[in-house]
Image (cartoon, rainbow, N blue to C red; front, side):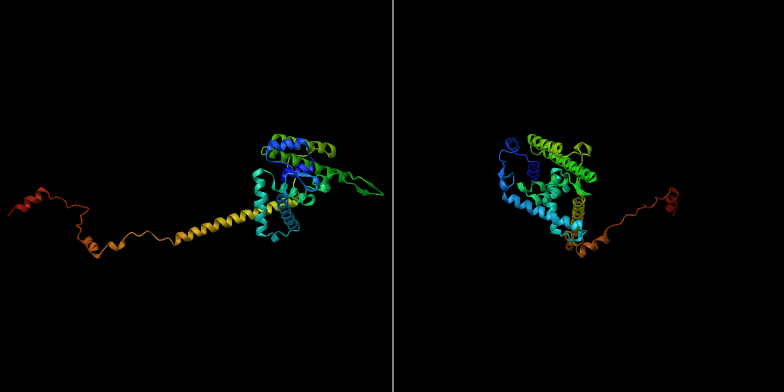
Length: 278
């Protein structure tokens, strides 16, 4: 999914992409997507991703309005199972996946909505100043810096995916990121730190879901612990055949000769001679 989104966002296509996909997996091929745009996703996959993106979007809306209590358990479990856990396996920031999925909800990898990707949302904007439309330096710098952060985040993602895909595909998308940055990002990718950028709302949703996951794990652990305690409480010792001990065997205990711990002292020779006198 992420590879398909990045390929669409940066307009990667042509024979080079076909050969890179063939090297990655011989059975992998581009399908005819919406409005003729090639895609790695078939119709069922696309519908599944739309469900994922819609679920993340609704959850982010609740978090943005501080309605964390409205997050349902099945909603949290769905996002953790289908998005967060796969992202962890790929070593991709879950918040970054949230951002890309919500962007997919807007553009759907359709050619007419290409400018609804995260890249075009952070390009230069013009603010009305005075009588005409003049660029605001503060606004331009902010948008350009956000674009640089997005480019670096995508570069980090494709660098991590390169180990799971193939080097040719990694270099192809990485070169497309570089060319897009040189053409559209005047701020420069080299002026920002190499770290994944995530919007505050997506970060807050990840933190909330991780807390929920920890809580559910603890409840599951304590539930199993309490069950083990109950089983121990009502545990019955194995049968040892106590009924075979009859009263007769108990009475025999009194007939056992007891031995004095301190034996009697032997008589002295004087005492023996005295006893022998008539």
